[in-house]
Length: 136
Image 1 (cartoon, one colour):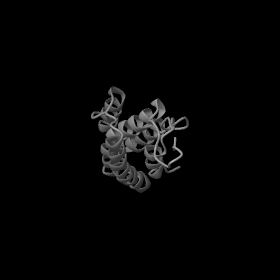
Image 2: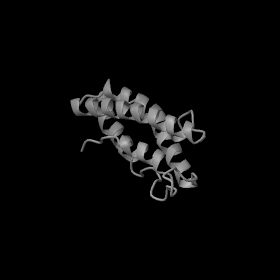
Image 3: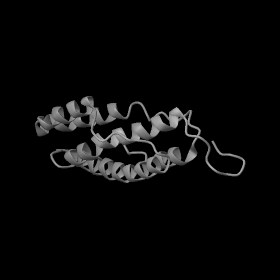
Image 4: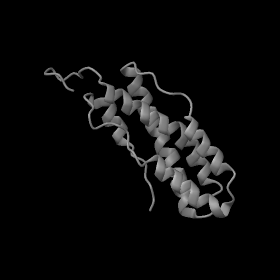
């Protein structure tokens, strides 16, 4: 929320959640996007993997900078579910890799970061700047 003097107001729980969720997503999607860009059979899956990795890497820098400015501690490891997804796609053959990797990526993006109730515009604006691209 902006104050009358134009400065940022207090950070609310939704702001912290948005930063946390975006960083948590990047902990899985940068390495998984890179991994998808290599063994994928379909060139579109390889390209989307590269885009996801690149966009999340850029977003991670912005989120980490925003979190540092407002003293929000961010996660440093993929969640257990994200680790399971990584293990699952790592053992797939090329013929089943593409379909499962894309499914998991779409599943991971099914719920966008919690940002609709935020009061601080700076972290949210930065998080919105780099929305990952999902190919149909």
